[in-house]
Image (cartoon, rainbow, N blue to C red; front, top):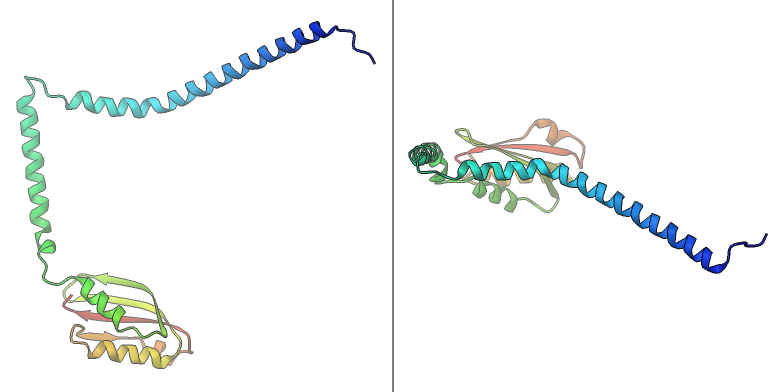
Amino acid sequence: MSNILPKEAKKAVWNTYRARFIVAGSFTALFVASLCALSLLPSYLALHAGDVAGVPTSTSTKAVNDADRSAIASIRTILTSLSPVLVATTTPTAAITKVLSLRPSTITIDHLTYSGDEPGTLVVTGSAATREAINGYRQALSSDPLFKMVSIPIGDLTGEPGARFSLTLSGAF
């Protein structure tokens, strides 16, 4: 089969196809850009609607001052309710640090749970290579004066080696 179009005509046809492809690609890009702009429009409007409402006018200055005073009063109330926590003499970090420092190398601690009741409770869960390691860890924690009570379920001490354990520590932390 032979080509019946001369080279110049063939070049003109390819230029037409290329122009059509560019125009179609441009329209597709414009359509995608407009979809993106429409999807971002609610966020833009929400941001700028807050700016318009936040600008005080001369007639609403008293209302803004009253709003500021009520916000300050609510913050003071929150700070008053949180002040016992902020000025606490002991924190659970000392107890957690002590639990981790007394841990032998054969014991792996997986999870610590703290409850700030009176007395404070700290639950240590993990796994150990041997039952003796669990018992030694319990004895080391019992000998520390920070912990008033150290308890472990008897099943954890009589179970098979390499088993999981759960220690419950109570004290003033």
